[in-house]
Length: 272
Image (cartoon, rainbow, N blue to C red; front, side):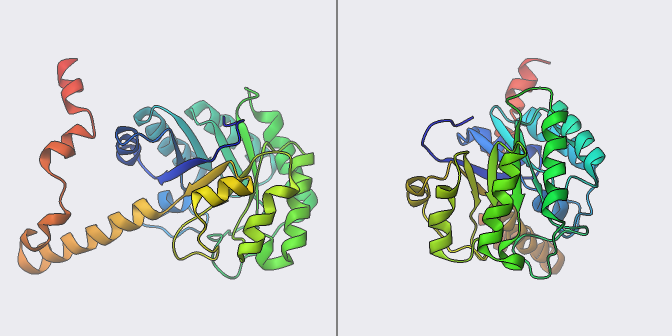
């Protein structure tokens, strides 16, 4: 996917409904956010969702979406053998790419403090295992590293280069901290580079046009959709609990027609 010099934007989704809405509004690719999926279980983004739980959720996202799905593989759920099984399960679920990161367990959201890393050699073995495990060459292995906050920018570049040498198809350096870092990262690599861009994170906001000009090929926006849902859900629930109805927040409610349209109800009824 995307061998051209253009930027593919992947909005983050975490269930079949979000994937279906993304399809209806014209998205060509989506990102199955591990953090958002964890929060949909009522859990923080600390590596608490199992491999099988994630694979099941990916199946529902793929079934609801007509396009490319990239997924968050966290740390690979263990050692190289776990990485191998994860790649096989996620590829069977129908996604087109997965990123694996070099945090030690328990992992944290990439924009939180207190992260720690496994060794560069251990991470490279995980990438090698992932490459060997895939059945199709066009299933993309994305090497993510979180080294900037721990070992510095130069080491993050070095770790990413080692992942590419081990077979990673795409580079993902998490949480660049300055505009200069954001601009310079793609120039270090001949493979495509992915960036995580969302409001409130450590990375300074950079427009899609600028990112494309710098050489990025993929931009994920992992949590904006869920953050909007969290705020709307809290407001509606608070109104129902305190007032017994949602009249005061009715502007937050989807019209019934849209509710049914986004899950293709008419098509299902026609085929029944």
